[in-house]
Image 1 (cartoon, protein in one colour):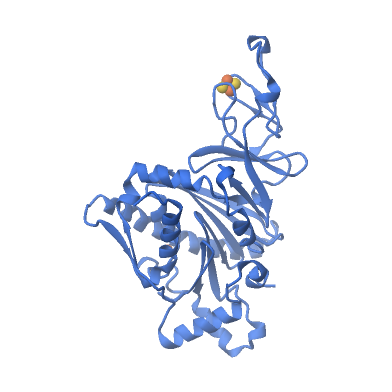
Image 2 (tube, protein in one colour; image 1 turned 90 degrees about the horizontal axis):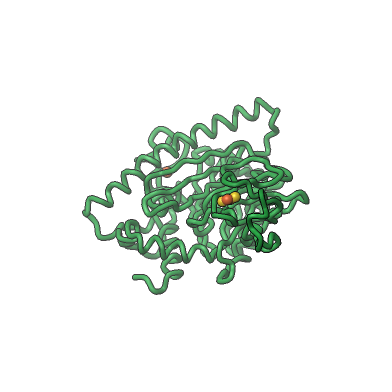
Length: 385
Ligand code: FES
Ligand SMILES: [Fe+2]
């Protein structure tokens, strides 16, 4: 079953793979691409202002987001600590196999009880060794007689709303105001098949506002100019099928090899070597398919001019299948080289903000998923100009 068939009952309006490929053929034949209905001007100030950044984070804390694929927490005690919208959290798989999330701060004097990722039987604070169970409960306090009024039952790690569905782990920092949980959950059905295991995780901090990083994933207008020797030999420049669903988008980047399908019956069309879908799951998640693997990218805003980009690569290829893994790694090398090219323009775009040349950045008809994103962000911050 294809990605799109899995999604059909939840995403309402996405085309199936055959319709996407027919639209790609039409674009190739007519030297065309999907275009949006409006252009957009986003004020440069929205990429530079601390006040605007703070307002974004406080709006985003009310949204459900994807923290990582389920396969990144493999087995009881597996944990991962990272910031989500400026809040340090730790996500951990319990002994029973369920997943919990907590604010990553000791209830003594606030030191973070977990760092990075790994496996633990408990969390021991590095400062004075208060010890917490995987369920967040405060289990041990050295020299406890120094805290005569401490009620340990009330001083567990502070929980955060967390769900595991569709092979993904979701969190919401400020769940009280959250309203779109089901939309995000429903729109991820089938994106990460159960057969996929974690192949690798990588993380990098970029000196750029998170929206500049995000925008680089959301259009195919830069394939020839930026990805001259990576994607462009394999894919078309500015030839995409672009769809919006809810607050999200899906972009189809066809490979030149899609042409081979013209001579085959549609019933035999296989998308794996013909096109890449990039799902943008609002606000900061990208899930894409590539030959032999899928990538889940999380763009975490660290500061107004810093973003942490964490990439989880998942695959159905077995850990001992060295021949197939070599193919995965060679496809991954192309993607990583292209991501390096994106980083150069992302960092340059950030530096260009300081040139004071522009009052706003301009997004055209080929960049409709970026327009959709900015328009959604604006709707979440009604008080901001
Ligand atoms: S701050 Fe954690 S034990 Fe003191
Ligand atoms: Fe790119």
